[in-house]
Image (cartoon, rainbow, N blue to C red):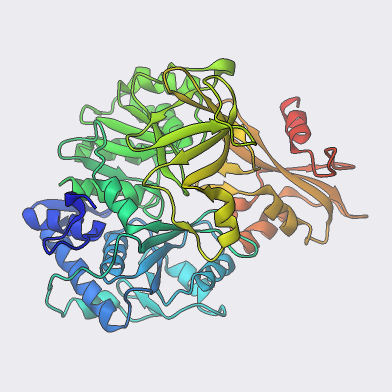
Length: 515
């Protein structure tokens, strides 16, 4: 354990304790600006975390507990996460766009003890209340359905606490896919997150002023942690709007923000871009989906040398980074580089037999680093399949060039990356086959001119049926959430099959590309 991670008594110091120590150094400075314009000082934020953590401890939330967070982009969301972790519990974020039954299933699968809800998610909480298996619920503010735990905690003194977690304890369980059956819960340790805080972000600002315009439950929350740890300020927006992003950068003198490529394109296309004062901006981190080389070159020309591309997975966190001068760097076939491995991260390209391949040859991207997951929650067989001898088998196909730049060219396992998460075709197909108008189906993706992936469903209708797209979308949204609803429906006489008898998604995708 490095000295940076040690508490004064020689024990482990969690990421929350590290952030709280920084907040204590300058209690009067602004730490958070809410979407409503309320400024919360470092001392106020620290006090709220300590009070709520103590209240949770008195409610028997501690080491071994699981706290689910049904929260939006609010200060209360950060306070709740920090307090739950400080009390010793692991946290689970319930993502917007996921249906209430799926959320209930996720909470049950990770043995959730308590659900905390902020003011942005009251409607979803109402959908959860009548479902079986939903844990006790507390509100982060006034509500008509649960006690206001923040109001109760506010009557407490703000006494420091900590030392309740070890480096190998889970700070969170993240979920990707797995919306039918047992979800894939990815266990991330306190040690990995604590270590990640010490890796500085080039160009983020000194101190950084970070705009969180995408969900705190995803990567935006990690960047918020890093910003506060580096003595900076987090500016919150409830959701992404290109015009509001430009206005906030100018008004709040933002130095850093995180955008998925499709959102970056919306900023580039917004009519307010020309007149916006973006002189404070030092870094736009992009990633999460494939990026269009042409649009990135346009962004570099318009915005200047502020683009930093991140490549990673939920199982591995960050793997590689492409700096501002690398948006022009493409490999064979025009693939855009995702950058070089970050310090402390090893990347190898290997074939099916495990042989490490030389530069230029394609194989599976495998990763070893201190940031990888501990494993999947209660799924040892899947953990053993993906995590072998300390190496994560990512399922991505790629290659390295002679200088160590990594290029991603495809996926071994079928997965569609959409804004907000992942869609696994087999899972969606299983659901669609339960619709009375569907006899056979196959789910596949198309990629538009800006490299954004879109979900398509090819359906062989049942006899006498002719389902419409709106009908299919409503069916899927009600059961899995709108994230998984197909954007296009194709009624076909038969589903093309591979030699193994499985739906040939490549053929279907090619047909769409050919019009």
